[in-house]
Length: 169
Image (cartoon, rainbow, N blue to C red):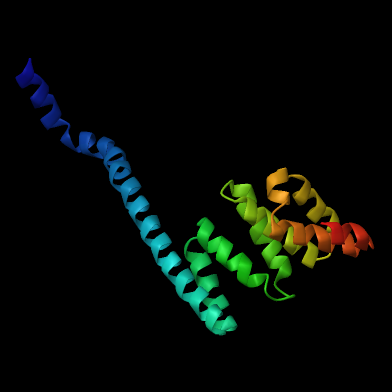
């Protein structure tokens, strides 16, 4: 029986090879993709770190350009998205871009509470007070008592002309 099975396999070896090719390709391609995406993410983080140091030194335009390159390499990396959103939020023209990046980070499920506060701050910078209030309302009380969150809430209250409440926050 075994010799007959080998004879049949040998006779139909081309068909067998062609039928196994997708399976073999799947076994080789998936790890290759994982390695490639890991390498690109590491490269993007390295670019992001260099860009952050450039921004800290005062070379904002070059730093933001590098962060955009890092984002193109790894658009799902939360560290890269966070760095780019922070750098876009530094200018008034970049506030709209910062809002979309912060929203993307929040929707991905990788955002921290501080990221949500930054989203509220970016919404405030784009004059979307309703959106900023909604984000602040979604935060737990212990986060709302932190200084950065309280600052955003105070700015929103001042915008509404509620200066006494803003001073109390």
